[in-house]
Image 1 (cartoon, helix red, strand yellow):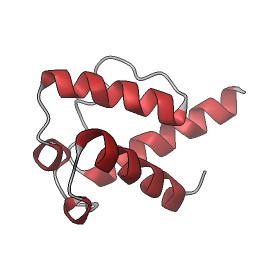
Image 2: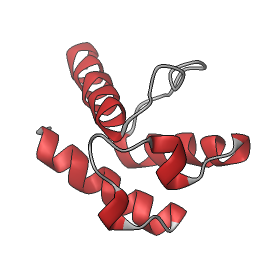
Image 3: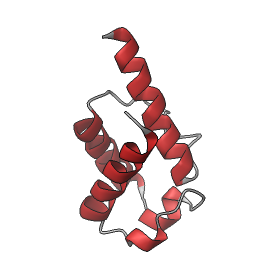
Length: 86
Protein backbone atom coordinates (compact mmCIF):
# COMPACT_ATOMS: atom_id res chain seq x y z
CA UNK A 1 0.00 0.00 0.00
CA UNK A 2 1.35 3.40 -0.96
CA UNK A 3 1.90 6.11 1.66
CA UNK A 4 -0.67 8.42 0.03
CA UNK A 5 -3.35 5.75 0.39
CA UNK A 6 -2.36 5.15 4.01
CA UNK A 7 -2.60 8.88 4.74
CA UNK A 8 -5.97 9.22 3.01
CA UNK A 9 -7.49 6.19 4.75
CA UNK A 10 -6.06 7.17 8.12
CA UNK A 11 -7.20 10.77 7.93
CA UNK A 12 -10.68 9.68 6.83
CA UNK A 13 -11.24 7.43 9.83
CA UNK A 14 -9.68 9.96 12.22
CA UNK A 15 -12.06 12.67 11.03
CA UNK A 16 -15.02 10.29 11.23
CA UNK A 17 -14.23 8.41 14.46
CA UNK A 18 -12.59 11.20 16.47
CA UNK A 19 -14.35 14.19 14.90
CA UNK A 20 -10.93 15.67 14.19
CA UNK A 21 -10.55 18.84 12.17
CA UNK A 22 -9.06 17.63 8.88
CA UNK A 23 -7.17 20.91 8.42
CA UNK A 24 -5.21 20.24 11.63
CA UNK A 25 -4.06 16.79 10.55
CA UNK A 26 -0.64 17.46 9.07
CA UNK A 27 2.45 15.24 9.10
CA UNK A 28 4.26 17.35 11.69
CA UNK A 29 1.24 17.90 14.00
CA UNK A 30 1.00 16.19 17.38
CA UNK A 31 -1.22 13.11 17.27
CA UNK A 32 -2.23 13.44 20.93
CA UNK A 33 -2.95 17.18 20.81
CA UNK A 34 -4.89 17.29 17.54
CA UNK A 35 -7.04 14.28 18.44
CA UNK A 36 -7.23 15.33 22.12
CA UNK A 37 -6.50 11.74 23.15
CA UNK A 38 -6.92 10.38 26.65
CA UNK A 39 -6.23 6.79 27.71
CA UNK A 40 -9.66 5.53 26.59
CA UNK A 41 -9.30 7.27 23.24
CA UNK A 42 -6.09 5.33 22.63
CA UNK A 43 -8.11 2.11 22.96
CA UNK A 44 -10.59 3.43 20.39
CA UNK A 45 -7.68 4.39 18.15
CA UNK A 46 -6.22 0.87 18.37
CA UNK A 47 -9.60 -0.67 17.49
CA UNK A 48 -10.06 1.70 14.54
CA UNK A 49 -6.53 1.05 13.33
CA UNK A 50 -6.89 -2.73 13.53
CA UNK A 51 -10.25 -2.73 11.77
CA UNK A 52 -9.12 -0.38 8.99
CA UNK A 53 -5.74 -1.95 8.25
CA UNK A 54 -6.17 -5.53 9.53
CA UNK A 55 -3.09 -5.92 11.70
CA UNK A 56 -2.69 -6.37 15.44
CA UNK A 57 -1.36 -3.45 17.47
CA UNK A 58 1.04 -4.53 20.21
CA UNK A 59 1.14 -2.98 23.71
CA UNK A 60 3.62 -0.16 23.74
CA UNK A 61 3.51 0.46 19.98
CA UNK A 62 2.14 3.96 20.51
CA UNK A 63 4.86 5.11 22.92
CA UNK A 64 7.27 6.39 20.24
CA UNK A 65 4.50 7.88 18.05
CA UNK A 66 4.37 11.64 18.46
CA UNK A 67 3.41 13.14 15.10
CA UNK A 68 0.99 12.06 12.41
CA UNK A 69 4.01 11.21 10.23
CA UNK A 70 5.20 8.82 12.95
CA UNK A 71 1.71 7.29 12.94
CA UNK A 72 1.66 6.92 9.13
CA UNK A 73 5.14 5.37 9.15
CA UNK A 74 4.06 2.92 11.85
CA UNK A 75 1.04 1.85 9.78
CA UNK A 76 3.18 1.44 6.66
CA UNK A 77 5.73 -0.66 8.59
CA UNK A 78 3.02 -2.90 10.03
CA UNK A 79 1.44 -3.42 6.61
CA UNK A 80 4.85 -4.35 5.15
CA UNK A 81 5.44 -6.83 7.98
CA UNK A 82 2.02 -8.38 7.42
CA UNK A 83 2.64 -8.68 3.65
CA UNK A 84 6.01 -10.32 4.28
CA UNK A 85 4.45 -12.96 6.54
CA UNK A 86 1.54 -13.68 4.18
